Image (tube, rainbow, N blue to C red; front, side, top):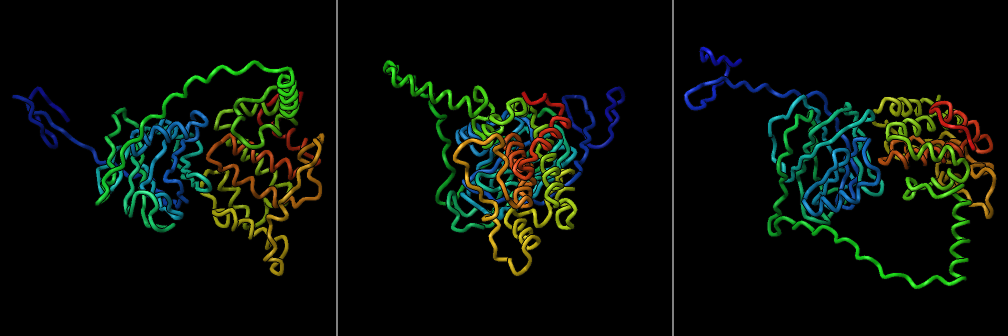
Length: 403
């Protein structure tokens, strides 16, 4: 309470010249917390809010090296770790109602703004590392803190023992605080890298010969045939985009224009359809994974690990006497020597093995790549009946008919 008329004081006081006013600071409250484990590699991890510009990670990585130890664009944050790797890196995530008080000794701390969409927070690292936390949607300030470091670079072990905490609270418009880096004894703090220079303009090419023009035209014609038209720019750095466009151009163009939220929903839809067709949905050890996918919760065991999930499926499919049978053999399919009308019809396959991966694709850190991969493996699961899957997708997402 502030009462200037009679100089009443409620709570603490703050002296300003001749006037005295009251100053009350409300405590912050912890709303939720989650404990995750990430397979960190290449000295970096990424916070995704689920929306924002696609393919921004490399630019943010350059920015983080130029202004250590992190960089973000409001939707994605790239964080540099002193350690090159930690294959079992614990991360403690907290959600607060306002900025919490400082606590604990942390060797590296940085802050960034982060918008989180309806699917929550995803944390990823190059190669295989990713984990999810069901953080409510909203605009946050994020504090990323780590400690327990052994060395800059190779830490001497794949599980060196560093641990991290991420605290999130509603963005109140205040600026993120300056970052703090680990001052390694005997080494110091790494210097920032220079911003990558702009590529110089290339020299003008030599005039094209008739044969070169002919080869280029043939190549362009072949590429257009594979894409069903001009290449789709949004699919340039993805797997499976060209295959989908060549088979169903109208659907591919619609997916390329989808938001991250709709792409996540599409991947989840494909996973559910594939699991239903393959007879996986009602298995007792599978059902919790589909429920977690729908709710945004972390995937339960054995889906916490891709290999563990496939090993469990092998025991279901082949029994204990076949436990040593490698499911990867069942999933290997030879490429056809010539294009077929239906590239998803791979003949006699193990449908459960192709379907199983769709849940992992639905949790991919890149929503577009996750959707394309989930569609592809679901389509292979349907095989000769792929149009049943695609008809369902069109109805569920109000997409135009196949041209």
